[in-house]
Image (tube, rainbow, N blue to C red; front, side):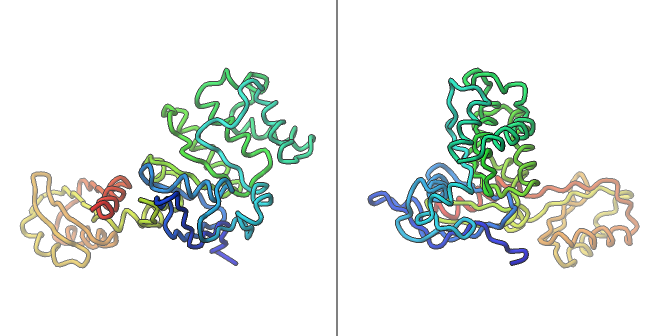
Length: 313
């Protein structure tokens, strides 16, 4: 199938609870090998979508497939190829780390010898090796999250689904978690992650879906989404700084929305990333020597607010 090798296909899924529509005719494809982020405020429908994909809830209408398997009619097979890391801990507090892995491995029908081999590798990757014989209840918050992930990995799932994994983690643990997610992804696992941390989505995800009230608001790469929302604002300082002579010329360039002089030099708003090269050329041809360029671009936070406002009004 080439570049668009779809591992998750969601077709017109709706899910209603009485009068309430948690998901409203959602369709989405997720490519194999990507880290895909589901973003949205609480009640946006993220968890409902995750519950449908992890066979915990049937859609009211529509269908979803993981690796070509139907989440409703092929439930058993789907469960064997996905790993789910819920918000709450899924492991057993009174078992040790290793015992938990053994238990979940046997639950998935993994051979004992494979459980041993895989446990070793997984604990190493998640930096839990030293804690193998510790009771799960004694672990720190960050380690508990990692054990949750370890239990979901023991059967080598093709798709790992993480529901708000960084909630309650300190920055160091969160960074370690991101490294783990990237490493798993490098090894070929497709990852679906729900989050409300914009920074997390921006740094981790190849593609992002913003949901609101059960609807898809927008979907694309973090870059695409940032480009749709706002223009890039550039601040250029140069010497000798004869800006007034140049503003007219810069303003006529394609991709330049505005160019004004302020106390730091030129403030230029670009509607097109590529226009920056022409701006620089124009200044240099005008005898300016550029000493500093600062660039501010919209963050994912801006994107989120922009789309949310459109939806909310």
